[in-house]
Amino acid sequence: MTEPVTPLQLLVRPGVSGEEHLDFVENRLMQRAAVVEAREAGAHVPQVGSSALLTVARLLMERGFRVTRMEFQHPSLGPLDDESASDLSHEVVARLAEEGVASASRVIAVNGRTYLTGVEFYAPDGTSATLRRNGLLMARPHSAVTEALPQIWAEVEGHAAR
Image (cartoon, rainbow, N blue to C red; front, side, top):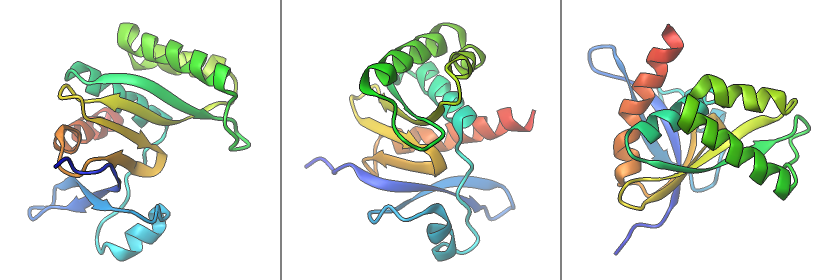
C-alpha cells in the first residue's frame, strides 16, 4: 500500500560532530514554523524563501526530477489569478531549466512584487511533492523526494555560503 501525502516540516538538526543535517517531522496540523521549532529541541526550520526554492528546483531538475509548477502570491498575500499564475509558472520553469536560477529570478522580478511560495515536482519514480516557503513539504514520508532533499539542501546551504 502506498503511503499518503503528508505535510512534513523541514528541520535542520545538529549532528553528533557539530555538522547540521536536514530532517523531516510530520506537521499534520500545518502548524507555523515557530510552533514546530518549540516542540523540536535544538532544531530550527530552515529559511526557505524564493531564492532557496528556485535553487532547490534547479538541483531537483539536475537529478532527473520534473518541476511542473511554481506557486506565487502578491505582496498582499493573495493568490494571483489562475491565468497569470499559470503563465508566470510556465515561464519561470522554462527559464530555470534552460538558463538557471538567475534567469528565473529575473522573470519573477520583472513581474513586480510577486513572491514565489511553492514548487511542485515529480521524482523520477512518479512520486509527486510540493515544497513551500518556510520549509513545508507535501510528500510521502519515505520516498525518493525525502531521500534526495537532505543532499540537495546541503548544496543549497553551500550556494548561500558563497
